[in-house]
Image 1 (cartoon, one colour):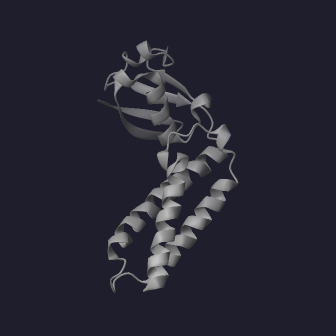
Image 2 (cartoon, helix red, strand yellow):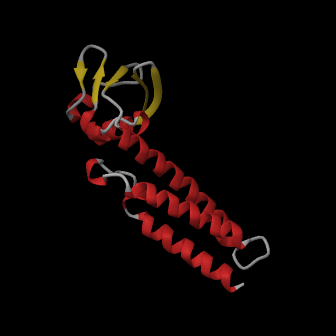
Length: 160
């Protein structure tokens, strides 16, 4: 693992990556940090090395200055924000799940989580997901799992 600093405009982002995973993994990591879609991202190292091939990644070391060019896509930025909020939401679900059936679990909190999930999923429906390369498993496949967990929690709370 190599720790580098990626610069995009006036922003600098600390990043740790594994060179053995190749250029695509580096671009995905940079994309997640900068919110620039992978297909519109250009990674350049000091000395003019353009990182597009796996062999180029091995030229990067911890002292390398890595610059990124590309424009942030509004849909991509919105999608990454939703993914972040879904992960926070999932953390809330994990805190409440063990409390279900006890006095500490209030139906209001569970219903509030359900409303939050509904809002996030509706926001996601307005985004063309085919235009974004989804590496985020929360966005790809775990939505259904989260919905089912919340529905289960709501049913248990309603039964109490």
